[in-house]
Length: 60
Length: 463
Image 1 (cartoon, rainbow over the protein chains, first blue to last red):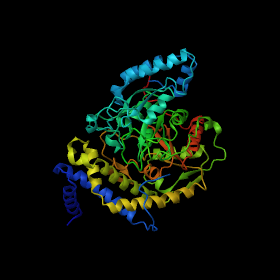
Image 2: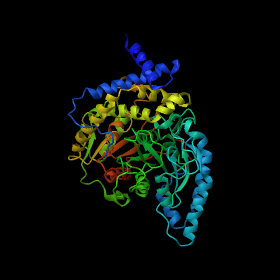
Image 3: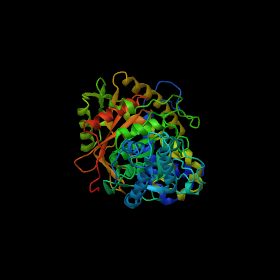
């Protein structure tokens, strides 16, 4: 499968499981934004983090 | 168009050279004449403003003391509660909400200083936007060129201040939504330390990143508004339990002894000639010869992006399920994509955020402030979907905040200072300080104004 097909399959299944109805004309933009977000997620994941707790609530 | 500062207006009112009612009538007239061109306001609270101004005048006539913002008109991004109005947050869906029962904390605190609320301001839907565009209310328009974006999501806040409709506006900044319109519209903006100013009575976007703050045409007015709004608030669990630390009296202390560095690497890559020129001009003016690398800034931006899209989607999940067709399409499609981002990515981003915070805070052992561009370019055209970044065509909306996101991710205070450019459009530079050191960033901003380097340019053709 191509990246596009993989993403479309993921979007179709994921949105159905989340209960979000997607119209066909929305798919290209959703795919674009999901690809950008997953790219950023990969960028973060590639960083070798020390073990530690996440900071779901941040205090400066 | 009025270019008077809040400080000048309040001084005139307090000295009874002019009445608050006279000032507010003039402001309401400017809004009536100017708003059709700028589309900055979504509601004008004329009756309320007249009543408040009359109360200020009555207090003065009775010899009673008045607040430091006596008679100063201000307006707020329409995600901040105004008693009697539904809090739109730029959306269609929220129009059906009941009117807010009370003012947001920051509105109440500004009015406690005798400022006068004159209305609610346009914004990008649910604050997920760097453009100032809005399909429900129409785009906020840049006073320097109404064909161009104000930037967002506090687009009306930028336009109303830069267009001379009000001297002070409040905005919110999750990833850059005060700093981007400050840059595109050419005004000063303060994104305080995360937790400094209460967010109670505002519609959230990403609670772990949301800040509220002022926009104005000078650092003195930023400081006046900021001082009036500080202090703990039990109604916002994020608001820090620390006393107010007023800065207005500190602005004139100068910058002698301050160690100021210029961000290098990531913060120069992708920047336009105008952004680099503004940065270098500011750096030269404050003697910032040292360059500093903010470690892993690109990854910090990526972490902010992942947290934002996922946390924002979680906030709106029910609305996405029930009323997806009622969203602004540009916002809806990003939120649906955000709902699909795996949870492991968000947890990893939060872990990285902790590491990054520790790494960046160590820099402040060596410097007091860091300079960086606010936006990679001047204001794009309304409707523009792509722009050139890193030498290639990139989607515009997700990428305007490349220089602001790594800073707000860890809640550092920033003052955005505007400079004119040869293009006739302004652009801003970020002055970034350590947590709780808004005073240093504001002192540097004030110094740059005194030198004539930073200023809110008068829009071309302005009367």
